[in-house]
Image 1 (tube, one colour):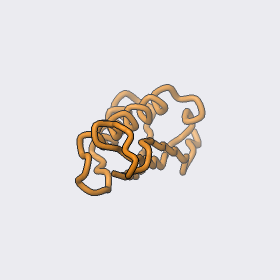
Image 2: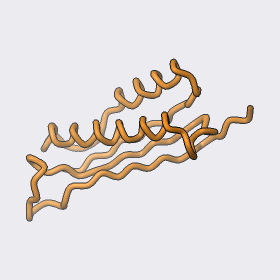
Image 3: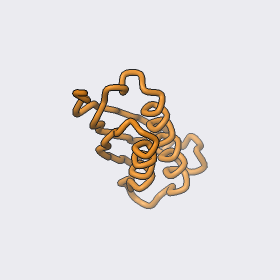
Image 4: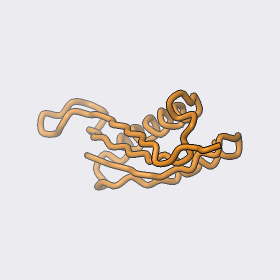
Length: 102
């Protein structure tokens, strides 16, 4: 079952700001049908955790003020290979829409 999720985040670079980012990521609802919901949710949690860690760790996102996050994937029942479906995957894209000017 394929899924996707997109959210725009404002990165305030504070502890409260990070909590807001985490809350927005966790509130985002993935698109897709109702097949393999548990497996999809496993992937969404893993992708969300990875995005949050990238934002917390900074690096290239240190000067970001607005970040567009896109996540997509495909989940199979039981996370097992199924010859009639695509292989499982997770894709994460982060795009800095606006840089801080201070």
